[in-house]
Amino acid sequence: TAPMLYIERQPSSRSIIFLIVLAPVLYLASLTMLEVRSGDEALYAAMAKDMVATGNFLKTHLYGRPIDAFPLYTWLTVICSGFQVPSTFTLRLPAVLALWALAAISGLFARRLQGPFAGAVAAGMILTCIVSFRVGASAQSDILHTLLLNAAWFAWFYWGQEFKQGYL
Image (cartoon, rainbow, N blue to C red; front, side, top):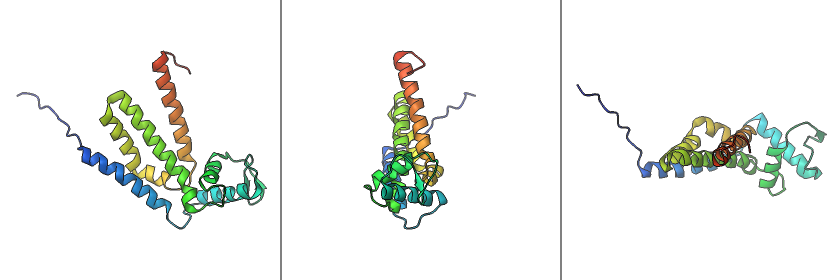
């Protein structure tokens, strides 16, 4: 008997468009939830509020006391809130934007290596994964760190191939 060939069915472009439309709807809906859901969100809101109140954007404060904390997420929250006291929407917006940027970078990377379909699948997997939704829909700096690490790795890989060197 002849060996059976496995042919994987490719999703239609309608399915890909559905995922592209579904992901922003899900994430934007989570931004509008009224309550703060975790301790991290409450801390980032308090740090952003103190940053706006004191006008000191270089040192993070929590309830008036200086603390040692990496201020990147707090800076992005203050910028998204227009240098005002953050709302739940502006508190979570940096995490969602970082997740969408991660999906875009991963999609572009996969597209470069394997073509447009692979790029769409890579971006769609990141946007619709339940873990991505859990992390990206709440104010956490973890997704920012993930974005920065992946961007650095993709840049190293891209320019390493481009210039045939392993360093930037």
